[in-house]
Length: 53
Image (cartoon, rainbow, N blue to C red):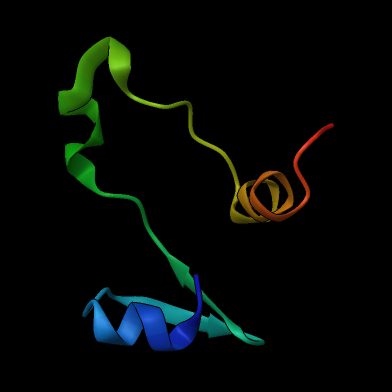
């Protein structure tokens, strides 16, 4: 997540280069079996911007 995006959404974050490091919501477990599997931000970015073909 970009730093500007985290700031505009008022999400608590720390800065790492040009990216904001954020913590996932404690309410994710309320999604039950439909909750997505956790992954590191680096993996999310890799999948989001370089999806497998």
